[in-house]
Image (cartoon, rainbow, N blue to C red; front, side):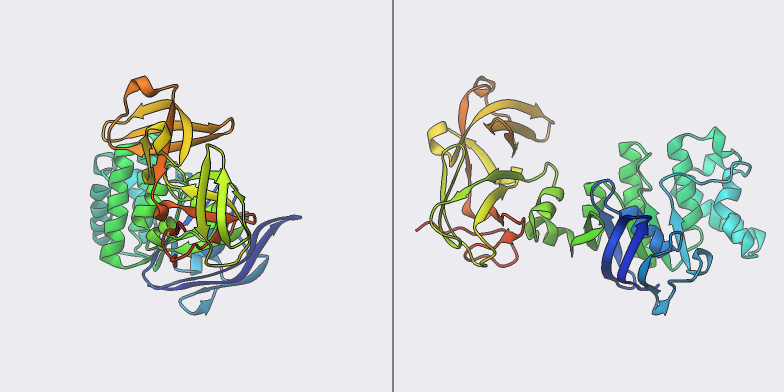
Length: 371
């Protein structure tokens, strides 16, 4: 096991800055997931840890040792790429076990380790095939197996499950989680899939434009986002947002907005007037038009079997999504309805995107007081 420390790490490609002064501490045995929109720098940051990309500035420490200038082969890490990067002339068995061959392990030991990993990844019936004879999902499983068989100090995963079908992706997610539980090895994992991030991570690192927006547990990021970006990025469907106008000052008073919205709110931290509010889909419920805090038009209902999503248009460019246990009456589609939500379901944000804590709020969802 080994800790990982990034100190003021930056990366430039020519005049373009991809990583901007990142500081991050990853503890021994921790499972950390990097998430963020495409182009935010998460894969580049992972490659800097691996030693595949050199940092322009800053230091990388693994297990207390400065490895900033140490080559990837000597960092004690195993990397699983989004692309398979398999040896085309080798069989599945040799692809998985080749790293052990280079270490000089006995053939029997290699065979046993390779067989164990192959059974876990369900490629044990493919051992004599070449990569060209495998499907995309099978190739990715072999690539994962090549990393697992080495049992390194640090596992680095760059969207390893993106080429797998949904059932196998869920199964592999469980296997990776079980591997971490069994080995207690430090793992850093890049994904665009929030389900992977929320279910696998001890902590999630949210990146945006090469900077860290927030680091925290899945529950911390979901229930106590630092800013609008994190609030909107974590959660599926995403948080609903609505621009509002303060009526009586920066920190205390009433806000108004589209859909006849008018709510009294008391701010707890003076970061500026409340410019936007957010409510997660599960915090909303459909009511009669005259009973809700917001009026809107019910445009569409999606039936997913175990739950339903209703889409309500508040303005020409603002549609809120409501998560429901049962479908509303179809005769309401195209008609005006009301949206109701509890005070504690409201998140508030200043014009600069920072979260405004409301009265009674600390780290959880904001609370609102009605004078």
